[in-house]
Length: 282
Image 1 (cartoon, rainbow, N blue to C red):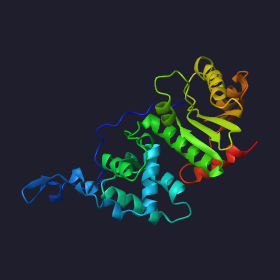
Image 2 (cartoon, rainbow, N blue to C red):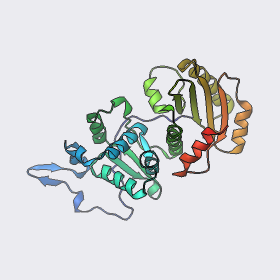
Image 3 (cartoon, one colour):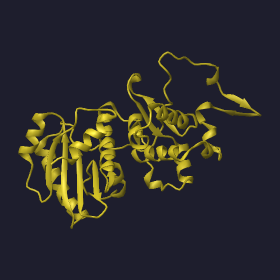
Image 4 (tube, one colour):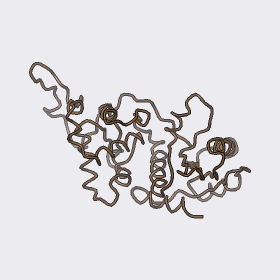
């Protein structure tokens, strides 16, 4: 159910338009006896870079850093809600131009994916963002992309519901490194400490009896260790009605409430509102 993030590594340069070819700007440019490759993004290391960024730009960069890899539409939902797509696009282009993020056009015709560059991390650290809140990620695999996008959408939905501190699986794995504590895809603890919710995104590709059921028991124990006085719940969001029925039939006896529901059919920008509806009903 959970995706294992990769450590930071070499990343591909932002993709060109499909019909583009190399041009003279791709050649190293010699300036006063030095050679700078365009890919090095020297502007991003200039101490004056931050002057080009508004607070909303910084907020966007922080969100990308927290989530590792996001879709541009998720940035719109989290930082630019109710603003036009033009505003979001200009922000992404500005961060890209300054060398703070990378942009990947998924399959060359799909959504724009965004992730942090080293220069973006350095700028955020200079801005006072704790390094433990910054995640340098590789581009997800084709098989892992949907899972990651659902986690980010669900995190935004929980934040929008209000009253929760939300941590993703990659945040928890960093905090619990070296332990055997099970890590849910999302953990939401109410700010008053009275509720704790583990959210699992089920891709319907793991065996229920040998993996999912034992995992639910382990998560149940972990929730009560994390918040012994809180009302605990485990929410499983899955694909397909038959899978949901099978899950409901095999849910083990736990002290935490276990709820099984379907992932919404809505994707892209409408997905967050759809998830809020799923997470608040019942």
